Image: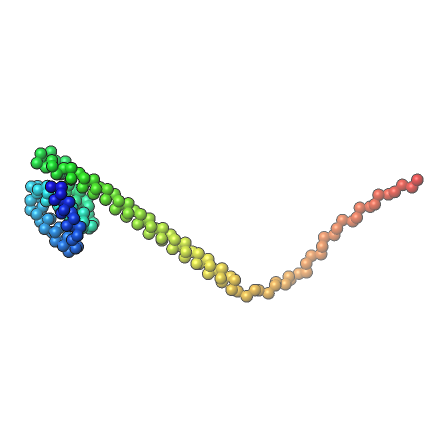
Length: 165
């Protein structure tokens, strides 16, 4: 059973997007028609196909399909549980990684927007600087009143008187 699912996974991996879409349609119809009585193999195949489709919500749907197999107490389903758990854990990790990638994408776009705003501000400052240096130097301003006279200095101190002998 595990080898068959691994071989099926390899087939899915090599399918063109149109073929994969047809396979998903076929599996969805089979699982929907049998709803509660769908075989574990069919459910596992649909889950694997959904992991290859890469459409919004497919990973969550694939995990939801595996959940009843993982939690089942039916002895007929027990042989499928280890593989279902493995795939379920992989899907949870993939979903976490995709969410992390989405968050990092948002952070990157925000950082790029901030960088663009900073560059715009820098260019505006450069334009102001160029406009200030491009003006011809203005003529010196002549004072309207003569400069004040220098402050009088203190008179020199008297020299010490010398004594005659």
